[in-house]
Image 1 (cartoon, rainbow over the protein chains, first blue to last red):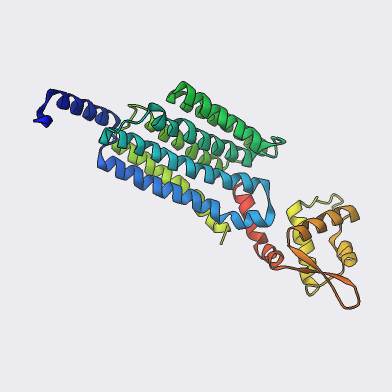
Image 2: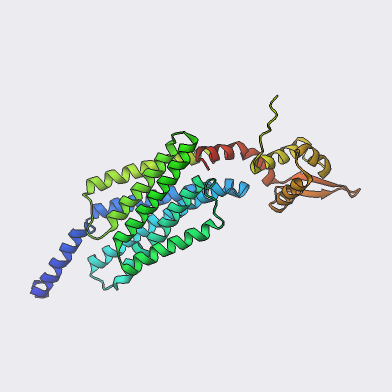
Length: 239
Length: 94
């Protein structure tokens, strides 16, 4: 019989070990990822749409960069899930997909949108100290550059490192700004946590870097709480 | 007496102009509006052009050919939301 042939068993064993290595075939893990993505993406998009009116009324630059942060983060989380789904489809159904197709999502789209989000949120808080003539153009150049380098080199680690460097830059700039005003900001801590959880999420996406599901769920719950707090603060002023 | 006057930011100036129009039964001529708004004529022209362009106020002409400024729905909405807008900017340190 075909199913008992050594070649079939070899392919099956290879696929199972690949699936287990990625921990992606596990339905619980997939359900957790799907639920997490739906909640985070919904919250990000709700924040983006809820702030539309106050931006339309004021065309305030700070509000502009604040709201596009959540649009970009929503898209980054959406593409992060798509990339997981792509790998899952590939390993589950043994479909031939060129390496680039399922690599393009984490490397290009996730990298681009998350870089744009990190830069926009940082700029929204420190734009008074940091006068840039065409910020959006500059952010796009940086984001495209980072996603292109990561995509061409096919190095997932490079993307994590570049995002970590951006995060460090954001922390340094924000700390300088807050030390001038001599106030401790709850918001600053929220943003740092928000970025850190993103990097953890990016780390999980990498090949063979799965965390135990309990730890991953704990991270994701805390990350949802952080976004929920931001969402709650937004809804307080956008009734 | 405090001689140093705080410089109003753009959002506050817009609020003041719109509030003055509303206080005058939503109909005021440009010259008294300039006087009440406490702006230089150049700044006032710039703000007025912006408010007209963005649809916060509109110009109406009466039967005698006199021009008046009135608030649009968007203008009223700005006045209504102003405190929330300030709260939002402060909350997120924008």
